[in-house]
Length: 89
Image 1 (cartoon, one colour):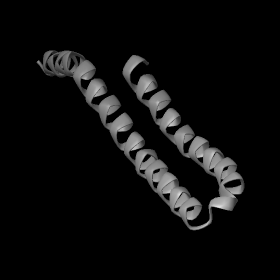
Image 2 (cartoon, helix red, strand yellow):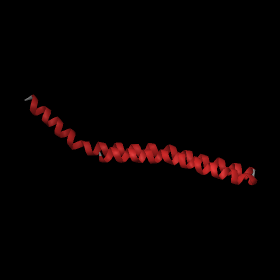
Image 3 (cartoon, helix red, strand yellow):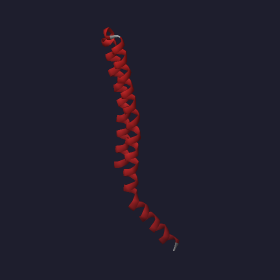
Image 4 (tube, helix red, strand yellow):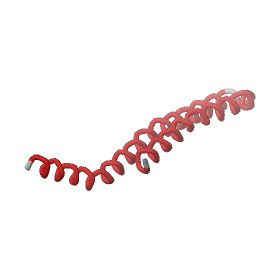
């Protein structure tokens, strides 16, 4: 009797697992992508503000801005990798 009940619980868990994995992967990429998106917007905004105040410094501002955006985007890529691992492993 207890073995049958345990078997039913295992079967129900196996049935719901793909749905839970999909939801977890979706949350991982949603939360993991929101932070970098906000950061990239703020970085670009402040860089454009700095260039607007001092147009001669555009060359000195542009390269660090691009590097910082790349670092922020790397976090989103890590979130994507984690979401794919959750979904398919």
